[in-house]
Amino acid sequence: MNTMMAPQRLPPSLLLLLLLLSTSLQKAVSKSNQKSQTHSSYSTTNSLDPNLQYITYPLREESKAAIVEWGNSAIISALDAAVADFGVPTSHSAFFEVETSPILADPVDGRGGKPFINTDTDTDEEYNVPYPGPLDNADEVRGNLLVMTNQANMSGVTMARIAKESGAAALMVVNVDQETPDLIYSLSIENSDEQVYAENEIDFPVVMVSLASGNLITTATVEEGMEEEDIVNNGMPERIRLYAAGDRPFFEDVSSQSPVLYLIHNLMTEEECLTLIDQSKNKMELVVDTNANDNSNGNSNDGPLPNLLEYEVAEPSGSKSINIERTVVWKGQINSHAGKQVEERIEQVTGYPQDQFSDWIVTRHTVGSRHELHYDHHPIYPPVATITVFLNDLDNGEEGEDGENDNENDLGGEIVYPNPVEGAPVMIAPHRGLAVVHHNTDYDGNVDYAAVYGEMTLRGGKDKHQEMKTVKYIAKKYVYAQPLPPSKRLLLPLLAVLTGGKLPKWVIHVHNLCLSTFGLEKGTEYFDKLCTMFPVFVLFVIGAILQRIFQSKLSSLEHPPNGGSGTSNGSSNSGEGAKSKKSNGGKKKGKKNKKLE
Image 1: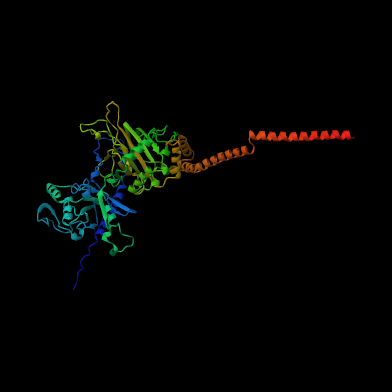
Image 2: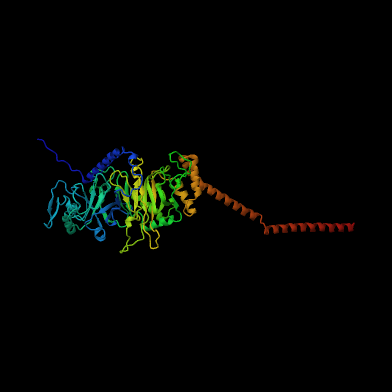
């Protein structure tokens, strides 16, 4: 008699891992296909074009952002989540915040092979929102946070109904989109029937996390070499906390590949932005991004080198910066406590180490300023990524009847990426504290020509005095593949502090002299060595000066110039007087001897 073994079901957490591996494989295939594209395929758009059909970001709102957090005070892990358009909103913080156990749905997509039904199991009330019934592990789910994937392609309200009928206190949907594993969005209501059901029945928070985040939470307690039977709660932590993001940083994915592009909301606070603006005041200089004697035929020229030390690079096709001022805020390792907090926050949210950051480069745009399409490049320190932060909201000086800015979106100054490999051109409007992060290289370390970007012309109205008021401040921070040398992290910031925060011109001249004399590679090496030796030389000079001062003091003590000389003369006179008396005494004695004779 032949017997057939029943197929074994894969653990739900393993299904998420398989989905992530599948996504990685698809990305690798897509990446290899893109290698056939050349630089020429991206060079057709070589100037800013306001007439392109851009998708304007940011799309996410602070009210739709939430944090999923677990761990203790020593080690805390957190995920970014998008809040649904239905359920408890973040404004009702007392009802939105949940701290409970995460339970993985069984089946993991909420449906499995079940047919849809339409009756509420508790009230027998019918809603025109069909669903596959409660979960198989509804007893575990009751009173906890349900983790479910959207693999079954059910609507957000349908998944919320499954969670409701299973007794969940909150629902976290894992977006398993194979093409964009980092994408999250707010689940929405799709029809009027769902509207009725959501308003009457969904009284708990509903959020979405990405596939990468879902994999992270389902392996939070899994250690290397752990057996399957030793994994507790599908690898998830014992308890997690869901709360509104508020003014905390949260992400918005724009493009997952070529270029890798995403936004970080609330990366910097208003106070931190204003501090950077204040530190850059009275230090700005007009950007000069061409060589003085640039030849149109592309041959090398003998013009002066650009200020490579402060990340000013000559553009091969002519100037790209139109009426833009800039300065470098040299801080490095001598940053203030508040500045170090910003650096640590950037390190935490981006994953890049601090010692691979440049200092902030602050630029100032006035009405008419623009930055034509360009790549971020550097012949010595090529950046692998660029972090751009808007330091102020734009204001055209005009107010409507409600006291708010009119035509705020007509002021220009947006950052645009016109050539993404997939999707429409991207436009990012200025918002204070919003960071734009893009990668300048692909996964193999090659230049990503789709990362070409620019800044639209800044427009604006006049204030009540008929003066142009609109000004835009942004701050850039480049990320490098290797840590920066001590010269840039310590010595140059120290020199800048001694001269009021701006690097002395003679330092830039010495750097350019090294480059022009020895070439880029050797010149940079010799400049770094010179910077290393400079503190030793300064200490030697200070030591020599102190030695001269000490010797002078010691000499004055041994041979006093005034009172000491009078004492010496007095002693000398006393000696001469004694000698004179002694001679006179001898003469008198001689006279007596003569009389005796």
